[in-house]
Length: 257
Image (tube, rainbow, N blue to C red; front, side):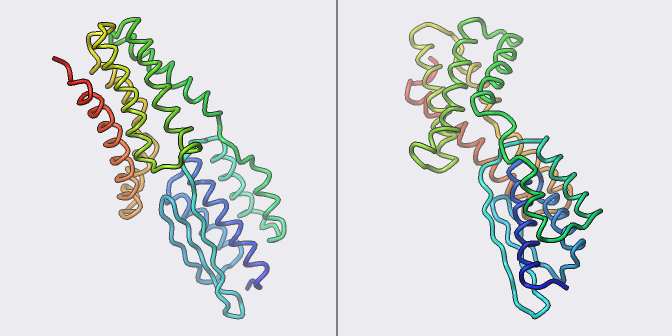
């Protein structure tokens, strides 16, 4: 059995690891399994867990019957498979060696909590990928320049705008694609490119939320209907927002005649 102090440390550790796994792009079933391993290692009696894409609530009772609860709200997903691997290895070490609860905060600090790549590097990598796609599809040199400008604008809005003017994630997705689509339609109106729809399709590929969609499928395959459905709905709404942004830009410029 664990006293109040020890149980508090265990719950702090489990909730922080769970939050970081979600932010790194891990699935909800993975968080559930990690927490179960931690609780089993320290013989926590009757733990309760409620895990959703942006909510973690765990609780347990001390040997005196006092309820202790931890609640965390993970932020946006920043895929980092290297950090996710390190977290998994750390949990295996905890399971094997069972360090004292007082040592758990130091263990979590040993795993760097930072994105795998800076945001500008992510934008650069996506730009290069879409330029390659534009080349194989036959978008041309001008099309490549427009695609590069469009994806930089759209992703910059999604990643940086919230720090200037806090707003809903779906609004950011729609606003980014609207600005990129307006650029493509303006280029068409001025005779710089004859197929803005092709440029929108290429850019849209870089804006579709791939990690939530993949995790949704994995959650559903693992029988987690509620969490999988929420992730799928999140990915669907973000994709819809991107499509609506492009559509509004076409409506603004009157479409292609």
